[in-house]
Length: 257
Image (cartoon, rainbow, N blue to C red; front, side, top):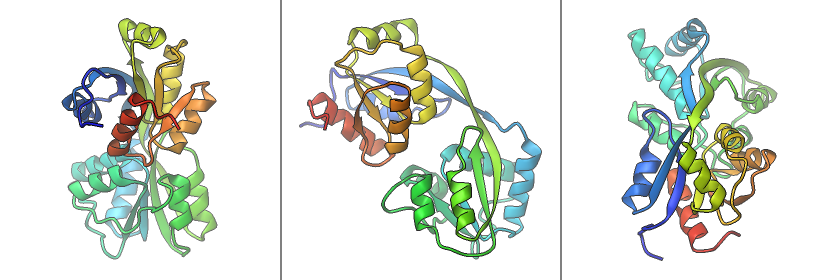
């Protein structure tokens, strides 16, 4: 195996301002077809979000639990708009994040991560390793998020405030040429980075050639993709870009275990 992915054609989800995976794959020599399968929009209730951010900055929460960089970005923007900073109550308040990508984004704005699940990087994994306790936990989520985190933390004794931080809506997806390439097998791999992306891709690409490797970022995304009838060839070991790139390498080398 070499570092190069020269000649490999990969469909990669992108969102506005989030092109790092696509750019990294291009830097390795891959031909990338970008698809804006989802669009991230502001919360439908900005007043509730600002109020939650204010309570966090005032030290009313013992923990904040975040499963998405989009949620973190929305909170950071709301705090800055109000002339506040998310770092103000830390410590004694603590931050829990679901994975490496969110941990990096937290570090970028000066937030120290107290808990990141070591086994399963998902909402369920975060619940499993979260301590039992009393007090309040802020859980900023997207409009399509399930209640795994909220209910799991409540079972451990916490009072949970879930607030919508952002909304996920359908994006334009792939252009006609890329859809045709997926159907004809002129693409080597498709990367699926979330359940929302998998659902939108499946709706747009009714035909996926047998040789196209579907690569899911994490087991949660893989489960959502299979529910949409997609044949997932490989699941990235952890939900981060490094693992996705490693899975792309395995797929093009014929390892679909």
